[in-house]
Amino acid sequence: MDCMDEGTDALDMINGKVYPLRQGYVGVVCRSQKDIQSGVTIRESIKNEEAFFKKHEAYRHIAAHCGTAYMARQLHRILMTHIREALPGLRDRVNAMLHEHEQEMADYGNDLSGGMLDHTQAGNVLLQLFTKFSRCFADCIEGRNNSNRHDIIDGAPLPAIVGGARIHYIFFDVFGAAVNQFDPFDGLTDHDIRTSIRNANGPKSPLFVPEAAFETLVKGQINKLLSPSLQCAELVHAELTKCLSVTIRSIPEFRRFDKLRARVYDVVRSVLASCLAPTKEMIRNLIRIETGYINTNHPDFIGGSRAISACKLQRYWKWRILASGPLAVSKFLQRFLVSCNICESNALLTTIQRAAEWPSVCRRRSAIHL
Image (cartoon, rainbow, N blue to C red):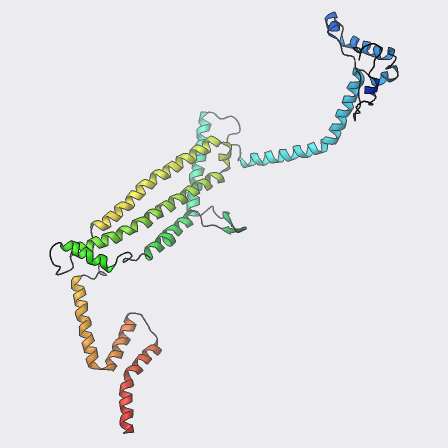
């Protein structure tokens, strides 16, 4: 204020007539560089400031509202008002943050050692964590800690099949269904069979079905079981990896050790991945074993001699039954249906018997009519 030219003043600015402010203006006189070099203290500078406003003709009537001391009181008043207004909300925010951090600390688990860890205590803590991890991983596979696992489907939580139950489902419902639905003649046409027989005989005319053609066709069908078997191994590996993720997330102590959690996950996942390749190789070896030797001595296998015997027996019973009349046909059908478990109903058997006796009944009625 003291640097303005003589005959000019800032009274209109201080009174808010030029550009009004909500808190108004406060005029001050700053300590100049000359005062600093002259050794004028701050107290002396404030006294000189008060004397300036009291002696100035334009600022004399507002001297009480000017100066550094008045500005300090105004700033203090504004600060205290702001603190009073913001303190309740600030208290609520502090309490919310405190509760949040306390919950986060609770999620990290209990104190492992009660203070700083030395090398011996750190080893014990690692051993405890690894033991707990292995136990939780085994529990996940055995189905002892998945009661609270749920998946969200269409907005509704439904219990999910996880761990050992999922592996059981993969073996018996996925892989088992694929094996049970496998058709031995899938992709095998009569043309393929004839072509294989002709290729196995070479330039010779075929007299009997060559064994080489049979083995070639059977090996091709057995190799089709390789794909669902490898898929089963992949699904089991994926489920074990999912169990690994669930186990690590379920242990609160791992949340405070990010690097340890990441390292354990990488090591266990690499172990599971390293076991997948030998498993697939073992599956391929099993398929090679089955294709290396075709067992034709199985009781359910119908070989050449058994097939010829079955054909002879079928022709024998066919001519004998036809020569014995309709009643013998009905008895044969009854025995055949019951032995094959096709029908055990007495009503159907009675119907077959009546149908067989119908020609004789018609002949008796014709004789009576005549």
